[in-house]
Image (cartoon, rainbow, N blue to C red; front, side):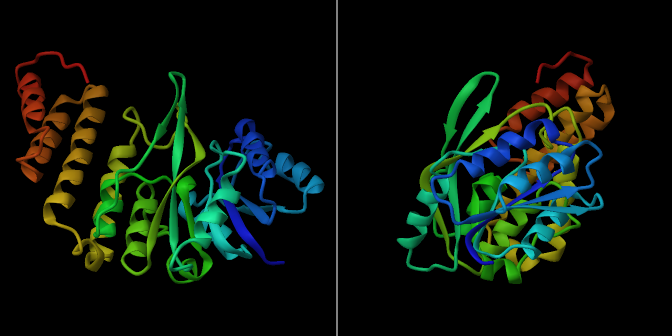
Length: 299
């Protein structure tokens, strides 16, 4: 049965967080939606939890797949969806109660209805809550979406677009950035000022300095550059190199935190070479020199 919104939630072993996420959808002031939870091979009680909620609300749908990462899970959810517009929500984030209502009203005002909409978010951590707002977009939306991080939970996309373009399942971390760029290359993208998402920061987040997120980001960008070169060509070379150098710097810090100083020095040199006129080049040179002389570094 068709509906206005399909909300897709990929999840893996998030039993303790998932109920609150689903309840944030059930609490929406706009009711014409379906919620598809794609279980990416969980080994906890996620299935039992979702199915117990499904019995009480037939707008909730449970889909299981063998573990294949988030891109495959979101694509699976897209394939099972019946909504005119598709939203994504991570299994540890929440929609504010009027999110879908405000989103529907915003879409109705746009010139092109086959589009992608980006909402603002509220970041929640141990340090408190604070809104994160995107800068005003320029004419080059491909470049804009490469440079500005937009989490899937902030995005709503017409189903016509996602019948043509889906997440690249070979890209693990920047799969969302790459898809947004590909969409912006072909379809209109609108930015709403409504704060519709609560984005929760915790140690379980997939990308953090202590983990291998930076390495996976780097690998994902290289794959995307090869496969979607025509999209990347829409950007200024400086924009591409500056972000890549930031990722290379994060890889250097990852190695430094794991006491691999030689590897850290190599990646710092790579970052400096990639974007020698970057605003952080002086700091990178300082850290590189500190490593070479054996001085401790605070990062």
